[in-house]
Image (cartoon, rainbow, N blue to C red; front, top):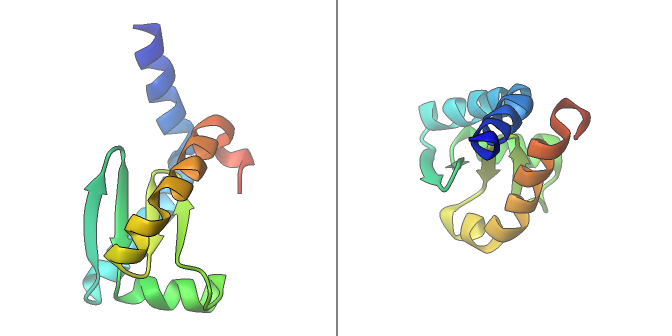
Length: 100
């Protein structure tokens, strides 16, 4: 029971960044992008997500994590980067608003 409560608290702790990632991802979906759920993360790719990554993160960035959301350029690049991005999901759970 305590483990479950701590997990829920960690998700809430990361939620300010998750909300930002959801906003960017939903704009991506409205512009032709796609969404998929992998584990506890929601992944977005394509559409305006590509423009966001290119303009705000650099043309060499394949994926970026915000809380429990992972934004990527394509499903193939997300699959390639997933293990690394999950490290960041766990960091957001640990550090919340102090990570980033």
